[in-house]
Each structure stands twice: as C-alpha cells, then as structure tokens.
Length: 79
Image: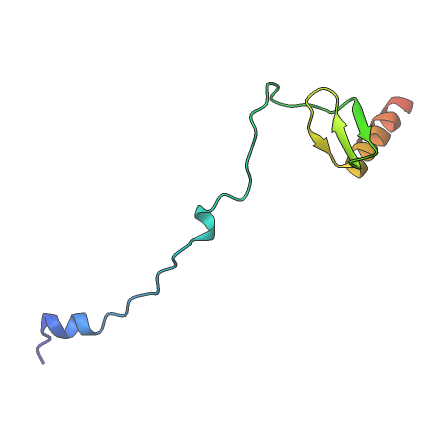
C-alpha cells in the first residue's frame, strides 16, 4: 500500500488558536522605586482613605502584615 503526500496532509488536525493568551497579558504594573527594598519601619495611617502607607517609600502597606512584622520584631528583641 502506497501513501500519497496529499493523504498524509488530510490526516493533520490543527489545534485551535487562542486569540489572547493570558500569559501575554500584563496583570501588574510595577512602579520603579528609588530604593530597591523597604522594610516599612515607619507608617502613616490615613483614616479618611483607610490606608496605611510607608513614610519612607510611600507604598500602601497591608495593615495586618505590618502589625505582624512589628510583633515578630518585638518578640525577637524580647528574647
């Protein structure tokens, strides 16, 4: 039995092409910072906006995470 090239091509099934691959989409926009890393040692609480911002770098800080880091730091100092 002889296989012809046109018969081989008829057996090929193309995969569907995704128009927008989520890996190519930008999900986060990063703002350049003058400091490469900040420990957020000092914060400002804005009652009106209900935000906690670092006084040094200006980043919005998650309140619970900041309090947890302070508590852990105090625990290390107390030992």
